[in-house]
Image (cartoon, rainbow, N blue to C red; front, side):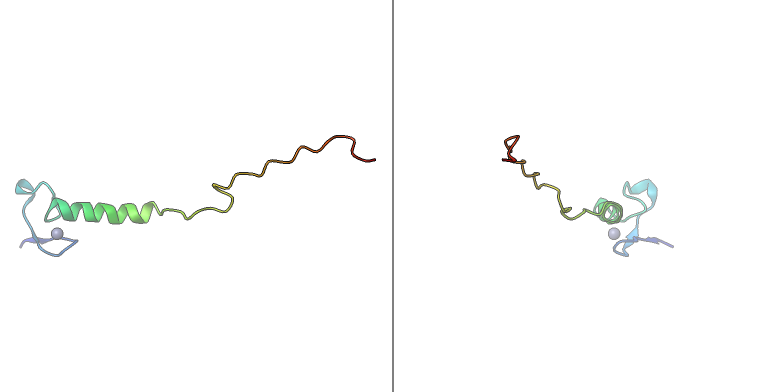
Length: 66
Ligand SMILES: [Zn+2]
């Protein structure tokens, strides 16, 4: 009974003839890898305050209480 590719459902060749086992092809293996990576490494959106340079504090002259 041939194993089915978990990605596309096609029959998978035995490991001895298939470097991409347990997938049907390297393409499906990459797709599966990308799927896992996509879940593990969620790309965070731009965080507030990130990439925004802190405004330089204007140089206030000392002793300006007059
Ligand atoms: Zn496949």
